[in-house]
Amino acid sequence: MRTTLFRVGSLMAAVALVFSACGTSSTSSAPSQVASAAPSTGSESAAPSGEASPPAATPIPANSSKANPGDVEIRWYCCLGTGDAPEQVQVEQQVADDFNKTHPGIHLTFEGYPYSGARDALATQIGAGNAPDIVGPVGIGGSEAFHGQWLDLQPLIDKNKYDLSRFPKLSVDFFKAGGEGQLGIPFAIYPSALFYKASLFKEAGLAEPPHQWNAEYTMPDGSKKPWDYNTVREISKILTVDKNGKDATEAGFDPDNIVQWGWEPQRDDLRQLGAYWSPGSFDSGDHKTVQIPDQWAASWKYFYTGIWTDHVSMTGPTFLNTEINPNGYPFFTGKVAMSENYLWSTYGVSDAGDDWNLAATPANNGKTTAAFNADTWRIMKTTKHPDEAFTALTYLLGDCAQTLLKAYTAMPAVPSEQDAFFTTLQGDYKQQVDWNVVREGAKYADVPNYESWVPAYNQTLDLLNTFSTKWQATPGLDLDKEISDLKTQMQAIWDQGGS
Image 1: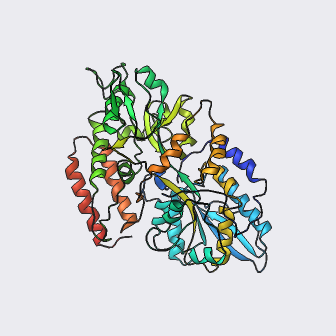
Image 2: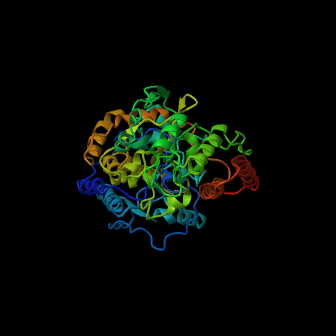
Image 3: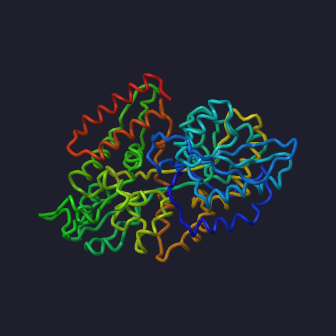
């Protein structure tokens, strides 16, 4: 999962937490719980997928402990997803140093680059034959950018009798996707929900969105409607207001001077726009032929209409205007009534005020899907020390899991650990948040996950970003033609065998 800012209170607590020892590692015991399957998280999703960025000029500082003569060095690389915030780096450095105090003969070195340059820097290291041993935390997107580079952990799991039974089977099996073996062990999950501002609904005379999944919504006239994207469009217009106080349903509404928006989707990636409508993939199944899932195309048209016809969502230029949207997610401004997003977006949601809460995401054609992010660590195939790397990996997943989960504001997947997580998270907010919405949302994860591998993965993301940017900035487009052009250009990239 990738975020750009983080809640200060949570991180300071994490920093305090890490200075108590993580504990004594034992690869035979299950990790302190975590992740179910399906994100990102690193959702790399929190930054527009496919953006090409040069490596950061300055790498993240390594941990302070030094290897002793004869130690096996294991390099832990960050940050293809979350982990590069200064407070998080402090936690990660201390975790690595704590490992070194308790594991003679192995030296764990924490290293990496800030997110903007981490992907390119890792590609450079791999190309130079200098790949790290462990990479993470990393989500599906960050991992699939290096498809085929990850070690199958199953032989090491069997050799060390590492207990996976405490994890839901679905979350374990998720990391078997692609037929390459057990490429990861669950760590952190970030389900989706609908964030909303209760005061804006009250001001508009509207009922709040339903907290129950697959529920109905009560309209102002008392009628009941399915909680779906059609209903969202209808009430979003009422919740979108111009500088003169007219909403988008009223005559004289001024779309050039909007001061409050009704709807904000998770727009970081065209794939996840589609995933909120239905699971899907661009791969038709033969790993050669591009398909555009019908419901993904429908979601893109809905998004485009929401911007340029209904005016309920920000245009691209408005979204990028830091005076209007300084932190990159419009809901944080307090000027957006509803926004689909992941649990990780709690890092900045307090900026929206003390009246926000969580509701179920809308259904599409009677079926609800909530896009999903999940993070873990992976071992690279090229490691020369798989046993020592696995020892370090299981330390991060086990003895230090709670410390790191707190630092990343990440939800454990195992239900028995979620109460403690949400109790701690609730302490950051004045209002009582309905966290059960998020728990339930995990049941509606998109499977297959939208970030799963397709041919020419990185070039495909670049292409998607190009089209998304164009659509958000350009009114009057023929979306059917645009989608056809996208498919044609994507097929050409796949045919050329891009990376």
